[in-house]
Length: 388
Image 1 (cartoon, one colour):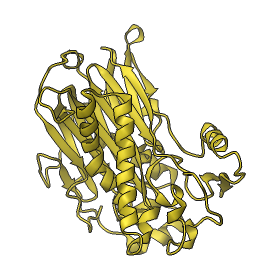
Image 2 (image 1 turned 135 degrees about the vertical axis):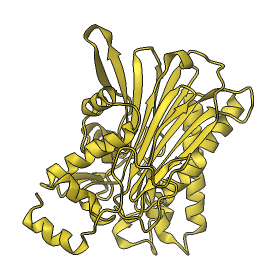
Image 3 (image 1 turned 135 degrees about the horizontal axis):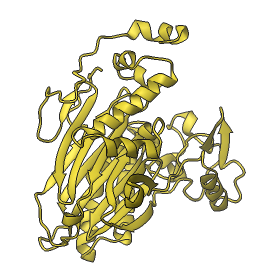
C-alpha cells in the first residue's frame, strides 16, 4: 500500500495506465523495437553469436538512458572482423551526452578497428577518448549559447564479442554480469565482469585520493552519499566538461556546478576499465544494464531470472522484477507504480535499460561466420509526452 505521505504527493498526478503490460503486447510494432507508453523493448532477436532481448523503461521527464546493439562488421573493411557490440549509456544532467555517445562511439570503434585491422583494448580505449574529445568540442562551440551542456555527462558500458573473446569496457556505474553454468551442480553462477566507478565504493575514493593527493575535498560525504567534489557520484564518464577542464567551470555555468578554485588536471576520467575474457561453452548469457536495474536486483537474482524463464521478453521481465522491488521498498503496489507518469516515477526508480545476450558457443567458435547485419538503438521512438 502507498503510505499516507506518499499518497499526498502522488494523488494530484495519478493517471490511468495507457500501456498494455502483457508479455506479448503488440502496440507499436516495429522491426527495430516497440514503443508502449514509457516502455521501449525488443523482446527477441538474433545477433551473430546467439539471441538477444532488450528493454527500456523511462522514469525521468526526459529519458536519459540510451543504448544500442550492433551485430556484423566491426570495421569498415568487408574482410574485417565480425562481432556483436552492445552499448549502455546512462546520462546524467540531461540526455545530450548519452545521445551523442549513442551516435558516435560505435563509429569510432569501427574507425580504429579498421586502422588497426583488429579489435583490441587499445582500439576501445582510443574510441572512448575520441568520443570524449568530440563531445567536449561541441561543448566548447556551444559554451556561450548553451553553457549548461558542460554539466551533462554519460556513463558508458560497452561489450564486444569478437573472435571468441569478450571485451568489457566501463566508465561509470552501469554493470555487465555473466551467467556461467556450473555443470557439476547444474547451477548458473553470476559473475560480475565490469568495474564500477562510483564514489560510494571505498576503492574508488582511494583511487581519487591517490590521483589528487593535494585535494582533501576530492570526495565528500553529503547526506550520507559520497560524491566527487561533493557534486557527482561517478568518477568516470564521457562529458561532464565542467569537471574535466576548468575552462568550463565558471560563469555562465550554474553556481551549483562551479568549484571555488580552478583545477589544473581533470577531476573525472573518460578512460574505461577494460576486461578481456575468453568465452567458453559454459558461458551461457550476459546481462548489460544501467544502474537503475542493479539498485533493485542483485547479480545472482538477475541471473536466476534469466536462467529460469523463457528467453522471449527476458529483458522486460528483468525490468519488471526491478520495478516490483522498487514498489515494495516504498510500500506501494506494483499496479500503483505502473500508473505513475514520467518525472514523478523518478522518486521511485531511475530510467532502466537492459540488454541480455545469449551466447551460442557453436556460432562463437566460427570465427569467419557472417550473419545478418543488425543495428538497433534502444528507446528510439519513445515520444516526449509518453505516459505510463
